[in-house]
Length: 192
Image 1 (tube, one colour):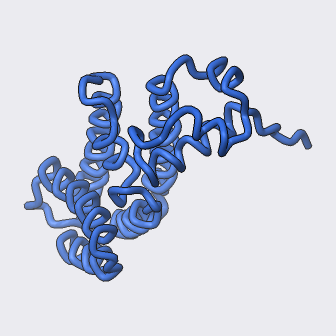
Image 2 (image 1 turned 120 degrees about the vertical axis):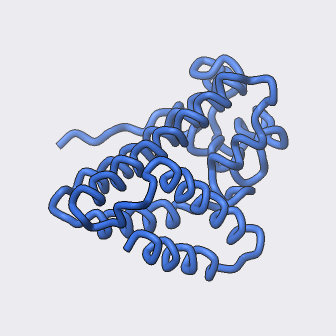
């Protein structure tokens, strides 16, 4: 079996992601990434022409990781919609990192260059994709008579994603883990 070799690019992405999320994009210099990663500046600039290009690659990697996790849960058609919602909610809330805003996407969004439509669009598209996925799951639940038929799917999906993101931030800011537990309980009641 062939092992995947960890490249300098992989190391830089891992270190830069950690630094951007815990210290902030603006507070992290390329020199610090060089020092922590032990990858030469020349090598880093071979892979990433600028700090902004590095941030773009980090966003792409985070989005791909989250989308794969979400798809894996949502595609489990042998489970009820309620079970998949519970797993999905658990999955999304367990991904909380030591990031400044409690959620990697909120942290990077608030730290990114404010004039960058590219970064803003990537994060917006990610959240729109999450909302659409939750909406599809809600519609499936309504068709299978597992979820209240009167719940408007699109606005409920927007509410769920907003509630998760808000709870991640509030839990991080207040250091109160009961916030996410209460959210899980409340969403389960909402969807019954």
